[in-house]
Length: 269
Ligand code: ACM
Image 1 (cartoon, rainbow, N blue to C red):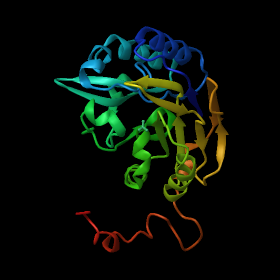
Image 2: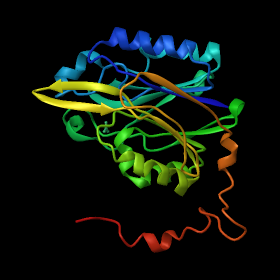
Image 3: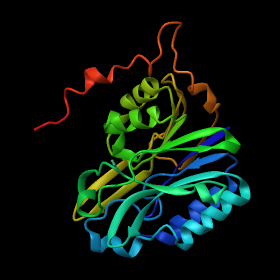
Image 4: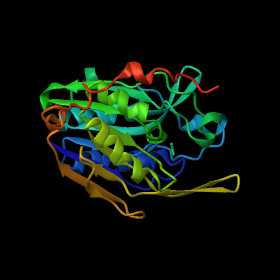
C-alpha cells in the first residue's frame, strides 16, 4: 500500500485556510493512507481554554464529514489532528477516517505537552488498533509527545499494529533518535507527520521543526523531509511484513518478553 505523510504550516486560528488545505491535499494526494500533523485545523500554541474554544469542534462537525466524504469516495484512510470539543472538555485529538465510515473514530492524546495541560483534558481513549480488512492493515495512532513514552508504541505493538501513525507538532530535535528504536522494538512502520513554522503567544515563541519521516520496521528512514518546506512524503510499504516478530530461528521479540520481570517497578513516588 501507499502511505503519505503531509508536512505543512497550519495558520494559527485560521480554520478555513487549514481546512481547505487539508481538503485539497486529501483529494489530490494519491495514496491509500494520508497522515496530517497534530492540531492541523487550528495551529498549536493556545494559552488557555477560552482562547481555544472558538476553534474546537466535535466529531460530528462539518469538517469531519467533508473529509470523511473524500475518504469514502476515494478509498483513502485519512488522519488529521484537531482540537475536539466534547461536552465541557477539549481534547487534543486525531480523526482516523476510514473509507468505511462505520470504522472511523478518534484518538485523544494521552500525554499532554507543555501548556496543553491548561487547554486540554488528558485523553481517555487509550491506545487501540483498528483492522481495516480491504487494505489488510492494522493501524495504531499516537500523537506527538506520546513518543516519549515507550509504553505508547509498545501498547500499539502488542495490540498488533503494523503501522503507527503519529501526527505531531514537535519542537525538539531528539525524537529522530527515538522513533527508529520504537520501530525496531515493535517491528512496526512509523509515520511522523510533523508541522513547520513558528507560533508566538504571550511573548513565547515555539518553533516547529519539520523533518517528518516514514520509518521502516528495522529503523531506517524510508523518506524524510527538511525542517522548513511544505512537502508530502510517499512510500510503498507492505504492512503484513511486520507480523512475524521472529528475528532468527530462536528469538521472537514479543514471545521473548518476560512481563513478570518488568512489573516490579510500577510507580514513581
Ligand atoms: C507536542 O506534543 N506537541 C510536542
